[in-house]
Image (spheres, rainbow, N blue to C red):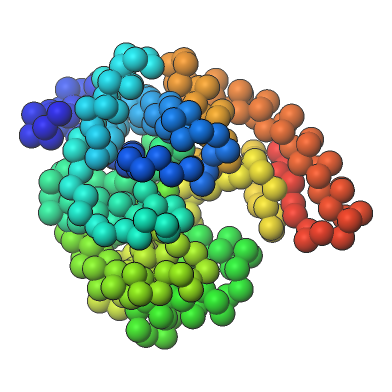
Length: 332
């Protein structure tokens, strides 16, 4: 489907919208095993597609247009129609990045190519990229109005909990060739005008050669490593960076155990966009029905309630066997 043929409207007022959000569904044709799901690659792809359907419906329920970007758009469109019949725009991306074949999170690296296309204005003037395992529970309202800023999700506290702060500083400094602080940004949300993505993409290309030369020695590989280094560069250029976590616009929340206590589910569910990386199966099941935010909240809370019981048992076992302490999710 050619992007030029798509006319996007707010469903209630029939006028062109000013925001457009996309998710990337890059299909690895070598069929490498998925690092996020413990199943066959073909089955994992169906889970990601179902997650994308749920994500799309959650955005459209709030009057925000949503599309997918893929290297195999026709195949993705056919899979969606077979699954539920939804008409989700699936656009062809321009992917030319030479990503090391054996690197972990291989498909995620192609988000960096999406940044370049965003910067070229090929997908609109005010655009955002979100992960497929996110759901929009509340409208963004006035949270994304600054015209000359890049909106990102600061995950430094979580990153430092799982990795030594000095290691993060070392790796970022290696990629930028400058002394950096341990500032880490999540890949589940990034939003702004095309001009800001153009600046970001230029910084990504500045970082990329260093990443290729050193990825085997970095504590983490993937788009978040490169993007965090690139944001460190553009901060010095004067581009305004706004953390959406501070305004409770975006939240990453794990129903799995974590290395530090996280906020209770009741607090997490007050956010606008919720990222649920450990609940892809649940999100896929939700694609079998129309998206209703209130119903989603009820069903997800019930799902987590049972899941948290097992996690607490595992934490108790760890305390007896003297394993590294982990924390179970809490509901309130």
